[in-house]
Amino acid sequence: MARTAQPPTKGSVLTVSTLARLLKRTLAASAVALAAVSLQPGTATASTNPVVGGTRAAQGEFPFMVRLSMGCGGALYTQQIVLTAAHCVNGSGNNTTITATAGVVDLRSSSAIKVKSTKVLQAPGYNGKGKDWALVKLAKPINLPTLKIAETKAFDNGTFTVAGWGATREGGGQQRYLMKATVPFVSDADCQAAYGSDLVPTQEICAGFLDQGGVDTCQGDSGGPMFRRDTAGAWIQVGIVSWGQGCARPDYPGVYTEVSTFAAEIKAAAATL
Image (cartoon, rainbow, N blue to C red):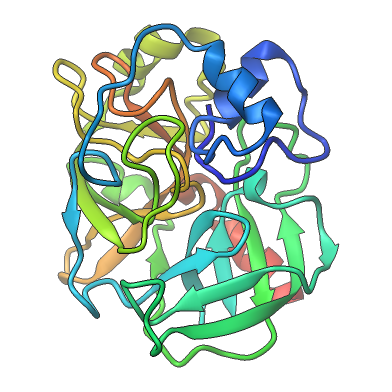
């Protein structure tokens, strides 16, 4: 299931399979979300940390991180555009309902920068499977560092960092403090062994600890970035938190939108906002 704070958006194919995918990272606050969670087999492993198995991020450690008011994460693609997941938003067009919170790890901090949205662009052709990216344009720029995106597959490997304000367990609520964790790359073959035809390997990238689980993104982390260092030591985004089976379960890695696949489309879409 997906890792957002809301059920699947318009245009999603609301089959049991799609609900299982698209409610993975939700806060499961609605009846639809709770129903989807109940369809998942197994029992969640409780954790004391959001971004299951993570630790608290330091103030200023990931200045590009953004919290969106619908219960998703995101990253500053530019100082006025947030890159997030398609399943976090409800189509494309003018939208002034989203509030972006940035500049803090503590969402209750008086230093938080809060800016309203003006427009949303959901990935063209998004239907609930693959193409899970979207852009949110803000009413004014946020003067913070941005996170560049991977334009080739050169960085689609190794160990990645994930961060978010997501839940401590499946079905849990969002957290006050930004958490972080590291997860290793999982091959398409191993990920398909877990998810079969639900995985779109040409558009998605997987990460997690296959044997033991225990570390993963979770509900409320959807749309947030998965990133690593590039050859110059700078952060580069390789994934967008998308979906998976439960949170931090053995044999079920997290599934992320493969940013390099959509880099050209994201760049072109941002230029239209």
